Amino acid sequence: MNVHSCTIIVISMNLERSKHLHYLNALGQGQDELDFWLKQHLHVSAIYWSCMSYWTLNRKEELQKEQIISFLLSCLTESGGFACYPGHDDHITNTVYAVQVLLMLDSLDRIDRDKVATYVVSLQNEDGSMKGDRWGETDARFLYSGINCLALLGRLDMLNKSAAIDWILKCRNFDGGFGLCPGAETHAAYVFTCVASLAILKQLHRIDQDLLGWWLSERQTKNGGLNGRPEKLPDSCYGWWVLSPLAIIGKLDWIDRNGLINFTLSSQDQETGGFSDRREDIPDVYHTCFSLTALSLLRYPDLEPVDARFCLPLAVTKKYNL
Ligand SMILES: *[C@@H]1O[C@H](CO)[C@@H](O)[C@H](O)[C@H]1NC(C)=O
Ligand SMILES: *[C@@H]1O[C@H](CO)[C@@H](O)[C@H](O)[C@H]1NC(C)=O
Ligand SMILES: [Zn+2]
Image (tube, rainbow, N blue to C red; front, side, top):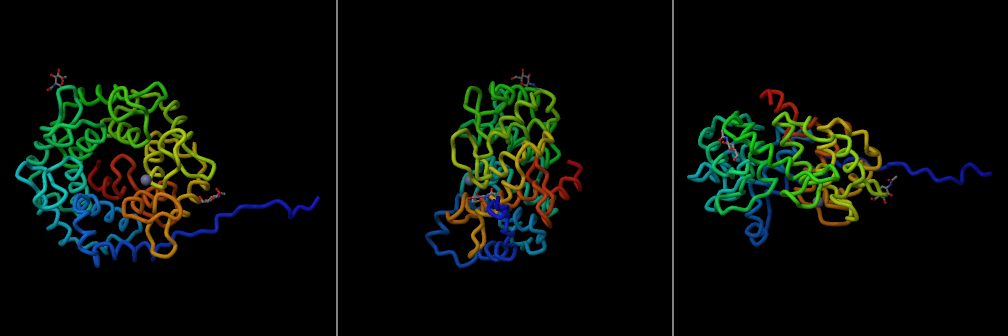
């Protein structure tokens, strides 16, 4: 028998650090006008994704701190919530992203925390759930955003916690996972928001962690990537949505680390930098952020540790005793 005939697959790819920094640096510049207007609804989110990417790559000193803060403050509305862009309506998603970035930049003193917290609490419904804005759509992501935001503001005591916990537990399914509202199918992104919410509220003992860990580890596909639901294609951002709840319940070793590193690295654009959802697609800052934070959870070398509950640098949540 010829021993050389067996094929050994080796991960030969590396993280293209300098290309990713180049990609991030170019994001704010040279955009054509149409692109700029089309993406206005993503401005505050894109600032958060890009700050997290720089930070995870150990390059937080490259952030234009004053420029970012003054842009965020220009998105603060009368209600106490933040809009995606000056002149737009406030929304819980932009509010948590803005507060996360201000905390990363040690600048929460630039806002009236009580006013922002009052805005967040005003979105809570009687059943414990939360609306995204005053027009009323309810979703587990919005409650997570509210809980994350109130914790960062040091105002978690303003929330009706018992109602929030009851509602989150109603989103749980027989498979151990969570959906976007009671009765909805389990999906990895909602598993993250519900598990991270319960972790911040110190209620992890309320769930079956082995069953949950099983559902999450079943998300790994043959090529090493993770999907958000059974039968779906893997996507690099699910590296974050699936791994973060596994990290929170201490079961990161329930997935194949090398397979996922290989899949994630194969979704980076070797020429322009940035990550896409999967190999050969066009990179964007959202997938760049969540690929890097996933690689950090996988202890890929020389990346800043990330706190899975808040999706913030661990150095920041430690500093503020979160
Ligand atoms: C919290 O919500 C529950 C359910 O709606 C309600 O019965 C309770 O009075 C609320 N608690 C506070 C402190 O508002
Ligand atoms: C590495 O990732 C590529 C692209 O997704 C995939 O085709 C290949 O099977 C993976 N290799 C291993 C060893 O997982
Ligand atoms: Zn994705």
